[in-house]
View 1 (cartoon, protein in one colour):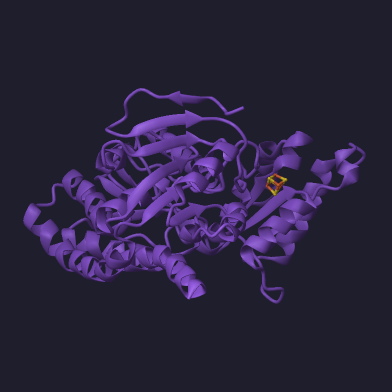
View 2 (view 1 turned 45 degrees about the vertical axis):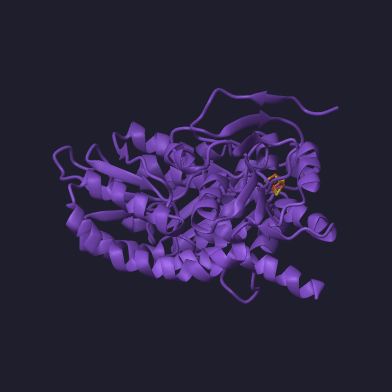
Length: 424
Ligand code: SF4
Protein backbone atom coordinates (compact mmCIF):
# COMPACT_ATOMS: atom_id res chain seq x y z
CA UNK A 1 0.00 0.00 0.00
CA UNK A 2 1.34 3.43 -0.86
CA UNK A 3 2.18 5.83 1.97
CA UNK A 4 -0.17 8.79 2.16
CA UNK A 5 0.86 11.82 0.12
CA UNK A 6 -0.45 15.08 1.51
CA UNK A 7 -0.71 18.08 -0.77
CA UNK A 8 0.45 21.11 1.17
CA UNK A 9 -0.86 24.65 0.86
CA UNK A 10 0.72 26.62 -2.01
CA UNK A 11 4.36 27.51 -1.36
CA UNK A 12 5.80 29.84 -4.01
CA UNK A 13 4.99 28.28 -7.36
CA UNK A 14 6.19 24.79 -6.49
CA UNK A 15 4.15 21.60 -6.37
CA UNK A 16 4.81 20.71 -2.73
CA UNK A 17 3.89 17.30 -1.38
CA UNK A 18 4.61 15.69 1.92
CA UNK A 19 5.07 12.00 2.45
CA UNK A 20 5.91 9.73 5.32
CA UNK A 21 7.21 6.22 5.45
CA UNK A 22 10.46 4.36 5.50
CA UNK A 23 13.54 6.56 5.38
CA UNK A 24 17.16 6.01 4.41
CA UNK A 25 19.45 8.55 6.05
CA UNK A 26 22.69 8.79 7.99
CA UNK A 27 22.66 10.12 11.53
CA UNK A 28 24.05 13.42 12.83
CA UNK A 29 27.30 11.87 14.02
CA UNK A 30 28.51 12.27 10.43
CA UNK A 31 28.88 16.04 10.94
CA UNK A 32 31.87 15.42 13.21
CA UNK A 33 33.87 14.56 10.10
CA UNK A 34 33.85 18.15 8.85
CA UNK A 35 33.33 19.93 12.18
CA UNK A 36 36.48 18.52 13.78
CA UNK A 37 38.51 19.92 10.89
CA UNK A 38 36.88 23.31 11.27
CA UNK A 39 37.27 23.97 15.01
CA UNK A 40 40.93 23.17 15.33
CA UNK A 41 41.19 22.85 19.11
CA UNK A 42 37.89 21.04 19.71
CA UNK A 43 37.43 17.36 20.44
CA UNK A 44 34.26 15.37 19.76
CA UNK A 45 33.64 12.48 22.14
CA UNK A 46 30.77 10.34 20.94
CA UNK A 47 29.08 8.52 23.79
CA UNK A 48 27.81 5.57 21.86
CA UNK A 49 28.12 1.97 20.73
CA UNK A 50 30.60 0.16 18.52
CA UNK A 51 28.24 0.83 15.62
CA UNK A 52 28.60 4.57 16.22
CA UNK A 53 32.40 4.18 16.34
CA UNK A 54 32.39 2.26 13.05
CA UNK A 55 30.17 4.81 11.37
CA UNK A 56 32.31 7.74 12.30
CA UNK A 57 35.60 6.00 11.53
CA UNK A 58 34.51 4.80 8.13
CA UNK A 59 32.97 8.19 7.29
CA UNK A 60 36.21 9.93 8.25
CA UNK A 61 38.61 7.38 6.79
CA UNK A 62 40.69 7.70 9.95
CA UNK A 63 44.45 7.51 9.70
CA UNK A 64 45.70 5.46 12.62
CA UNK A 65 48.90 7.46 12.98
CA UNK A 66 47.11 10.81 13.36
CA UNK A 67 46.24 12.35 16.73
CA UNK A 68 42.51 12.29 16.07
CA UNK A 69 40.16 14.91 17.48
CA UNK A 70 37.21 12.62 17.81
CA UNK A 71 36.64 9.30 19.52
CA UNK A 72 33.88 7.12 20.86
CA UNK A 73 33.37 6.28 24.54
CA UNK A 74 31.82 2.85 24.06
CA UNK A 75 28.69 2.07 25.98
CA UNK A 76 28.94 -1.69 26.55
CA UNK A 77 26.63 -4.38 27.86
CA UNK A 78 27.36 -3.53 31.51
CA UNK A 79 26.26 0.07 30.93
CA UNK A 80 23.19 -1.04 29.02
CA UNK A 81 22.27 -3.49 31.77
CA UNK A 82 22.65 -0.73 34.35
CA UNK A 83 25.49 -2.61 36.09
CA UNK A 84 28.02 0.19 35.73
CA UNK A 85 27.60 3.82 36.67
CA UNK A 86 27.84 5.36 33.21
CA UNK A 87 28.41 8.84 34.64
CA UNK A 88 31.40 7.71 36.66
CA UNK A 89 32.84 5.91 33.64
CA UNK A 90 32.32 8.98 31.48
CA UNK A 91 34.02 11.27 33.99
CA UNK A 92 36.99 8.90 34.16
CA UNK A 93 37.32 8.72 30.36
CA UNK A 94 37.02 12.49 29.92
CA UNK A 95 39.47 13.32 32.70
CA UNK A 96 42.06 10.96 31.24
CA UNK A 97 41.52 12.40 27.77
CA UNK A 98 42.03 15.99 28.92
CA UNK A 99 45.14 15.04 30.91
CA UNK A 100 46.64 13.39 27.84
CA UNK A 101 45.61 16.09 25.37
CA UNK A 102 46.34 19.61 26.64
CA UNK A 103 45.65 20.91 23.10
CA UNK A 104 41.91 20.38 23.64
CA UNK A 105 40.16 23.62 24.56
CA UNK A 106 36.57 22.67 23.76
CA UNK A 107 35.09 19.24 24.27
CA UNK A 108 31.76 18.16 22.82
CA UNK A 109 30.02 15.19 24.39
CA UNK A 110 28.01 13.88 21.48
CA UNK A 111 24.90 11.88 22.31
CA UNK A 112 23.86 8.84 20.26
CA UNK A 113 20.95 6.40 20.07
CA UNK A 114 22.45 4.17 22.81
CA UNK A 115 23.16 7.09 25.18
CA UNK A 116 19.58 8.24 24.69
CA UNK A 117 18.23 4.73 25.24
CA UNK A 118 19.94 4.48 28.63
CA UNK A 119 18.89 8.10 29.32
CA UNK A 120 22.40 9.27 30.04
CA UNK A 121 22.01 12.98 30.76
CA UNK A 122 24.89 14.47 28.78
CA UNK A 123 23.89 18.05 29.45
CA UNK A 124 24.34 17.51 33.20
CA UNK A 125 27.56 15.64 32.51
CA UNK A 126 28.82 18.57 30.41
CA UNK A 127 28.00 21.05 33.18
CA UNK A 128 29.65 18.88 35.81
CA UNK A 129 32.79 18.33 33.73
CA UNK A 130 33.04 21.97 32.64
CA UNK A 131 33.19 22.93 36.32
CA UNK A 132 35.95 20.40 37.01
CA UNK A 133 38.05 20.83 33.90
CA UNK A 134 38.21 24.63 33.64
CA UNK A 135 39.50 26.22 31.41
CA UNK A 136 38.39 23.45 29.03
CA UNK A 137 34.79 24.11 28.04
CA UNK A 138 32.55 21.03 27.82
CA UNK A 139 29.34 21.21 25.79
CA UNK A 140 26.96 18.55 24.56
CA UNK A 141 24.63 17.89 21.68
CA UNK A 142 22.86 14.93 20.15
CA UNK A 143 24.00 13.24 16.96
CA UNK A 144 21.45 10.48 17.41
CA UNK A 145 19.97 8.93 14.31
CA UNK A 146 16.42 8.73 15.54
CA UNK A 147 14.30 10.81 13.16
CA UNK A 148 17.15 13.01 11.98
CA UNK A 149 19.22 13.70 8.90
CA UNK A 150 23.00 13.71 8.85
CA UNK A 151 23.34 17.49 8.53
CA UNK A 152 21.37 18.02 11.72
CA UNK A 153 24.52 17.10 13.63
CA UNK A 154 26.10 20.40 12.55
CA UNK A 155 22.94 22.28 13.44
CA UNK A 156 22.86 20.70 16.91
CA UNK A 157 26.57 21.41 17.44
CA UNK A 158 26.32 25.09 16.47
CA UNK A 159 23.10 25.54 18.46
CA UNK A 160 24.97 24.16 21.51
CA UNK A 161 27.64 26.81 21.00
CA UNK A 162 25.25 29.78 20.89
CA UNK A 163 24.40 30.10 24.62
CA UNK A 164 28.13 30.09 25.30
CA UNK A 165 29.02 32.88 22.85
CA UNK A 166 30.20 36.19 24.31
CA UNK A 167 27.44 38.81 24.55
CA UNK A 168 27.82 41.83 22.31
CA UNK A 169 27.27 45.12 24.21
CA UNK A 170 23.86 46.66 23.42
CA UNK A 171 25.40 49.83 21.95
CA UNK A 172 27.83 47.92 19.68
CA UNK A 173 27.86 48.80 15.98
CA UNK A 174 26.17 46.25 13.69
CA UNK A 175 28.32 43.27 12.77
CA UNK A 176 27.88 40.54 10.18
CA UNK A 177 27.89 36.91 11.24
CA UNK A 178 28.21 34.09 8.71
CA UNK A 179 26.68 30.93 10.16
CA UNK A 180 27.65 27.43 9.06
CA UNK A 181 30.92 25.53 8.78
CA UNK A 182 32.72 26.65 5.63
CA UNK A 183 36.12 25.60 4.35
CA UNK A 184 38.77 28.09 5.48
CA UNK A 185 39.56 28.99 1.87
CA UNK A 186 35.90 29.89 1.27
CA UNK A 187 35.75 31.99 4.44
CA UNK A 188 38.84 33.91 3.35
CA UNK A 189 37.32 34.61 -0.07
CA UNK A 190 34.11 35.91 1.51
CA UNK A 191 36.07 38.04 3.97
CA UNK A 192 37.86 39.71 1.07
CA UNK A 193 34.59 40.37 -0.76
CA UNK A 194 32.90 41.85 2.31
CA UNK A 195 35.96 44.02 2.93
CA UNK A 196 35.83 45.21 -0.68
CA UNK A 197 32.22 46.27 -0.06
CA UNK A 198 33.26 48.14 3.08
CA UNK A 199 31.83 45.61 5.57
CA UNK A 200 34.75 45.19 7.94
CA UNK A 201 33.29 43.52 11.03
CA UNK A 202 32.58 40.01 9.75
CA UNK A 203 32.58 36.99 12.05
CA UNK A 204 32.07 33.28 11.50
CA UNK A 205 30.23 30.63 13.49
CA UNK A 206 31.91 28.31 14.16
CA UNK A 207 35.24 30.07 14.55
CA UNK A 208 38.43 28.16 13.81
CA UNK A 209 39.44 28.23 17.50
CA UNK A 210 37.39 27.77 20.66
CA UNK A 211 38.71 31.01 22.13
CA UNK A 212 37.72 33.04 19.07
CA UNK A 213 33.99 32.32 18.96
CA UNK A 214 32.06 35.42 17.85
CA UNK A 215 30.22 37.78 20.17
CA UNK A 216 26.50 38.01 19.32
CA UNK A 217 23.88 40.54 20.32
CA UNK A 218 21.09 42.75 19.03
CA UNK A 219 23.40 44.41 16.51
CA UNK A 220 24.29 41.08 14.88
CA UNK A 221 22.98 40.55 11.35
CA UNK A 222 23.50 37.00 10.26
CA UNK A 223 23.63 35.14 6.97
CA UNK A 224 23.07 31.40 6.94
CA UNK A 225 25.67 29.68 4.77
CA UNK A 226 23.82 26.36 4.96
CA UNK A 227 20.09 25.65 4.73
CA UNK A 228 19.93 23.14 7.56
CA UNK A 229 20.64 25.36 10.57
CA UNK A 230 17.14 25.67 11.98
CA UNK A 231 17.95 25.28 15.68
CA UNK A 232 21.05 27.45 15.43
CA UNK A 233 19.04 30.24 13.80
CA UNK A 234 16.40 29.96 16.51
CA UNK A 235 19.05 30.26 19.23
CA UNK A 236 20.59 33.29 17.51
CA UNK A 237 17.17 34.92 17.16
CA UNK A 238 16.60 34.40 20.88
CA UNK A 239 19.89 36.23 21.47
CA UNK A 240 18.45 39.20 19.54
CA UNK A 241 20.39 38.65 16.29
CA UNK A 242 18.60 39.27 12.96
CA UNK A 243 18.67 36.86 10.04
CA UNK A 244 19.18 38.38 6.61
CA UNK A 245 16.82 36.57 4.20
CA UNK A 246 18.80 35.38 1.19
CA UNK A 247 19.32 32.49 -1.20
CA UNK A 248 22.29 30.25 -0.33
CA UNK A 249 25.75 30.87 -1.81
CA UNK A 250 25.74 28.03 -4.36
CA UNK A 251 26.60 29.04 -7.91
CA UNK A 252 26.99 32.56 -9.28
CA UNK A 253 23.35 33.56 -8.81
CA UNK A 254 23.02 32.20 -5.27
CA UNK A 255 26.32 33.80 -4.21
CA UNK A 256 25.31 37.16 -5.66
CA UNK A 257 21.92 37.05 -3.91
CA UNK A 258 23.58 36.05 -0.63
CA UNK A 259 26.20 38.82 -0.81
CA UNK A 260 23.54 41.31 -1.89
CA UNK A 261 21.48 40.61 1.25
CA UNK A 262 24.48 41.69 3.36
CA UNK A 263 25.17 44.67 1.11
CA UNK A 264 21.61 45.92 1.50
CA UNK A 265 21.60 45.45 5.27
CA UNK A 266 24.87 47.39 5.62
CA UNK A 267 23.97 50.21 3.21
CA UNK A 268 26.54 49.31 0.54
CA UNK A 269 25.94 51.28 -2.66
CA UNK A 270 25.10 49.47 -5.88
CA UNK A 271 28.33 50.77 -7.41
CA UNK A 272 30.45 49.40 -4.54
CA UNK A 273 28.60 46.08 -4.70
CA UNK A 274 29.25 45.83 -8.42
CA UNK A 275 32.92 46.66 -7.98
CA UNK A 276 33.30 44.02 -5.28
CA UNK A 277 31.44 41.22 -7.04
CA UNK A 278 31.72 41.71 -10.82
CA UNK A 279 35.05 39.92 -11.32
CA UNK A 280 34.12 36.91 -9.15
CA UNK A 281 30.74 36.62 -10.84
CA UNK A 282 32.33 36.72 -14.27
CA UNK A 283 34.85 34.03 -13.28
CA UNK A 284 32.03 31.84 -11.95
CA UNK A 285 30.02 32.25 -15.13
CA UNK A 286 33.03 31.39 -17.28
CA UNK A 287 33.69 28.30 -15.14
CA UNK A 288 30.07 27.17 -15.46
CA UNK A 289 29.78 27.45 -19.24
CA UNK A 290 31.46 24.13 -20.20
CA UNK A 291 29.46 22.28 -17.54
CA UNK A 292 26.22 23.73 -18.91
CA UNK A 293 26.87 21.93 -22.18
CA UNK A 294 27.03 18.63 -20.32
CA UNK A 295 24.18 19.17 -17.87
CA UNK A 296 21.81 21.12 -20.12
CA UNK A 297 18.58 19.15 -20.61
CA UNK A 298 19.67 16.40 -18.20
CA UNK A 299 16.85 15.14 -15.98
CA UNK A 300 17.75 15.21 -12.29
CA UNK A 301 16.08 13.43 -9.36
CA UNK A 302 16.87 14.30 -5.72
CA UNK A 303 16.30 11.86 -2.88
CA UNK A 304 15.89 13.58 0.50
CA UNK A 305 19.19 13.45 2.36
CA UNK A 306 21.36 16.51 3.03
CA UNK A 307 18.75 19.31 3.20
CA UNK A 308 20.82 21.04 0.49
CA UNK A 309 18.43 19.76 -2.16
CA UNK A 310 16.39 22.90 -2.83
CA UNK A 311 19.33 25.31 -3.31
CA UNK A 312 21.17 22.73 -5.42
CA UNK A 313 18.09 22.12 -7.55
CA UNK A 314 17.82 25.87 -8.11
CA UNK A 315 21.50 25.97 -9.13
CA UNK A 316 21.15 23.03 -11.52
CA UNK A 317 18.02 24.30 -13.23
CA UNK A 318 18.84 28.01 -13.46
CA UNK A 319 22.58 28.04 -14.05
CA UNK A 320 23.13 24.72 -15.79
CA UNK A 321 19.84 24.30 -17.68
CA UNK A 322 19.10 20.90 -16.14
CA UNK A 323 15.52 19.67 -15.72
CA UNK A 324 14.11 18.69 -12.35
CA UNK A 325 12.12 15.49 -12.13
CA UNK A 326 11.62 15.57 -8.36
CA UNK A 327 13.28 17.42 -5.51
CA UNK A 328 13.05 15.36 -2.33
CA UNK A 329 14.11 17.02 0.90
CA UNK A 330 13.87 15.71 4.46
CA UNK A 331 12.55 19.04 5.79
CA UNK A 332 11.56 22.22 4.01
CA UNK A 333 12.05 25.30 6.17
CA UNK A 334 9.60 27.67 4.49
CA UNK A 335 11.25 30.77 6.00
CA UNK A 336 14.92 30.00 5.44
CA UNK A 337 14.26 28.66 1.94
CA UNK A 338 11.76 31.31 0.83
CA UNK A 339 14.20 33.02 -1.56
CA UNK A 340 15.19 29.65 -3.04
CA UNK A 341 11.60 28.51 -3.52
CA UNK A 342 10.87 31.75 -5.38
CA UNK A 343 13.63 30.93 -7.85
CA UNK A 344 12.49 27.39 -8.66
CA UNK A 345 10.45 27.01 -11.85
CA UNK A 346 6.71 27.06 -11.30
CA UNK A 347 5.37 23.53 -10.84
CA UNK A 348 8.66 22.00 -9.62
CA UNK A 349 7.77 18.86 -7.73
CA UNK A 350 9.16 19.14 -4.20
CA UNK A 351 8.58 16.25 -1.81
CA UNK A 352 9.14 16.85 1.88
CA UNK A 353 9.79 13.80 4.07
CA UNK A 354 10.32 10.35 2.64
CA UNK A 355 8.58 7.14 1.78
CA UNK A 356 11.52 5.22 0.41
CA UNK A 357 9.70 2.52 -1.57
CA UNK A 358 7.36 4.99 -3.26
CA UNK A 359 10.21 7.30 -4.13
CA UNK A 360 12.29 4.43 -5.50
CA UNK A 361 9.32 3.46 -7.69
CA UNK A 362 9.00 7.02 -8.99
CA UNK A 363 12.74 7.24 -9.64
CA UNK A 364 12.81 3.91 -11.50
CA UNK A 365 9.81 4.93 -13.58
CA UNK A 366 11.34 8.31 -14.45
CA UNK A 367 14.83 6.89 -15.31
CA UNK A 368 16.53 10.26 -14.61
CA UNK A 369 19.92 11.04 -16.13
CA UNK A 370 21.29 11.88 -12.68
CA UNK A 371 20.12 10.91 -9.20
CA UNK A 372 21.42 12.68 -6.10
CA UNK A 373 21.04 10.44 -3.07
CA UNK A 374 22.58 9.00 0.07
CA UNK A 375 25.34 6.40 0.09
CA UNK A 376 22.98 3.55 0.83
CA UNK A 377 20.91 4.09 -2.30
CA UNK A 378 23.68 4.89 -4.74
CA UNK A 379 24.96 1.35 -5.33
CA UNK A 380 21.56 -0.27 -5.99
CA UNK A 381 20.61 2.54 -8.35
CA UNK A 382 23.94 2.35 -10.16
CA UNK A 383 23.38 -1.40 -10.55
CA UNK A 384 20.11 -0.56 -12.27
CA UNK A 385 21.95 1.62 -14.77
CA UNK A 386 21.29 5.02 -13.17
CA UNK A 387 24.01 7.63 -12.63
CA UNK A 388 24.21 8.78 -9.04
CA UNK A 389 25.91 11.44 -6.97
CA UNK A 390 26.40 11.02 -3.21
CA UNK A 391 24.91 14.04 -1.54
CA UNK A 392 27.33 13.72 1.40
CA UNK A 393 30.19 14.72 -0.91
CA UNK A 394 28.66 18.19 -1.10
CA UNK A 395 29.43 18.64 2.59
CA UNK A 396 33.03 17.46 2.36
CA UNK A 397 33.93 19.62 -0.61
CA UNK A 398 34.24 23.42 -0.66
CA UNK A 399 31.31 24.37 -2.91
CA UNK A 400 30.12 27.82 -1.78
CA UNK A 401 31.00 31.08 -3.46
CA UNK A 402 32.02 32.28 -6.91
CA UNK A 403 35.39 30.54 -7.02
CA UNK A 404 33.85 27.15 -6.25
CA UNK A 405 30.89 27.38 -8.67
CA UNK A 406 32.73 25.43 -11.36
CA UNK A 407 33.79 22.74 -8.85
CA UNK A 408 30.21 22.40 -7.70
CA UNK A 409 29.01 21.88 -11.27
CA UNK A 410 31.85 19.42 -11.86
CA UNK A 411 30.58 17.26 -9.00
CA UNK A 412 27.36 16.73 -10.97
CA UNK A 413 29.09 16.23 -14.31
CA UNK A 414 31.47 13.54 -13.03
CA UNK A 415 28.92 10.71 -12.67
CA UNK A 416 27.61 11.39 -16.17
CA UNK A 417 31.11 11.24 -17.57
CA UNK A 418 31.84 8.01 -15.67
CA UNK A 419 28.73 6.33 -17.02
CA UNK A 420 29.49 7.48 -20.55
CA UNK A 421 32.92 5.85 -20.25
CA UNK A 422 31.41 2.63 -18.86
CA UNK A 423 28.98 2.46 -21.75
CA UNK A 424 31.59 2.83 -24.48
S1 SF4 B 1 23.92 7.38 16.70
FE1 SF4 B 1 22.36 5.82 16.27
S2 SF4 B 1 22.15 5.82 14.04
FE2 SF4 B 1 24.09 6.87 14.52
S3 SF4 B 1 25.64 5.24 14.38
FE3 SF4 B 1 25.00 5.41 16.55
S4 SF4 B 1 23.38 3.86 16.76
FE4 SF4 B 1 23.63 4.23 14.55
